Length: 132
Image (cartoon, rainbow, N blue to C red):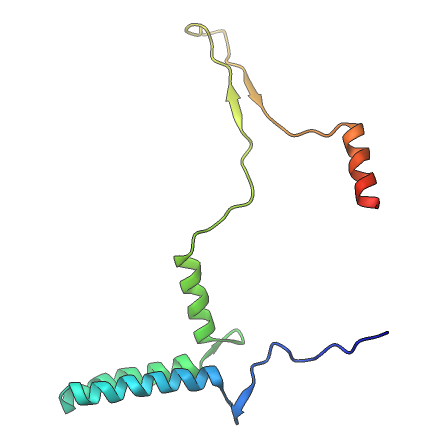
């Protein structure tokens, strides 16, 4: 039985016209901050703050970079710099054999590299497990 795959599942739901719920909350947040500052600051200082915060709020709400909203990029950048990073690869370990005494100028220290190797039996077991 074939199931119908929904389309446009990554598109945000539009509230009205071009604005989404996330954009509405960002605009309301900036509006509330500006209203609170209106009552806390003197009028001339509030106009200066408004002149900087209003365009920044509009840019944060409606701006896009490479078809990604700016607020999503800022959240991703914050997550990238704040959260720890996990590196899944591992360097090859080099183990040096200690020499019993000082080396003469003609002797070289031996280095042994550890590598994982598969023999035929292990490889056959893995292929049998994967074939099941």
